[in-house]
Length: 206
Image (cartoon, rainbow, N blue to C red; front, side, top):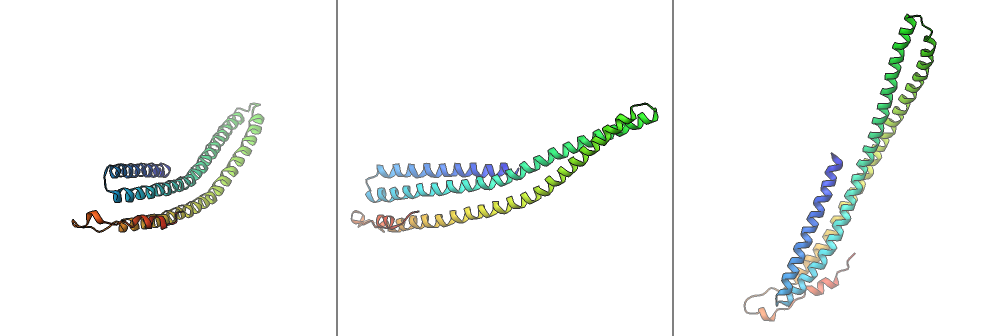
């Protein structure tokens, strides 16, 4: 359930990124049909920033996948434990059957008693071995779970922090470009000056 949930998170983020990119490209196409050079330049810069933001979000999705992998590791361990339990149950069932067969052989005073005793001894050894293996698997898996969860949450925390830091950087640049757009009124629309491009090129991108 958890694994599929995080898979859905990744798919949803990809769809969100795709919608963002489409909207930005369509806005740029619209701008280039306009005669307003200020809008063209500003939206071109916004589009370049959007490309950076897309890259950052894709890196974050990679972090989500890495986090999801920790739960896959836990699931794989649990599946191994289930196999060990099934093996132990099978050995115990064989032991119980041999005990019944031995009891019948003894009650009938047949010569098969010795054979059943030898088989029972061998199966008891298998049961003991299977129980030891199961105990070891369970103990080891508890350690694996703790390590996986700790590493997973450290990694996803770092991914979120990196996303936040880069988002601040990119959208401060967005804001700078937007603030560089001129304040206009009907009287000076033909004499506006755009300074946002200067802000854009003054930014140092990662």
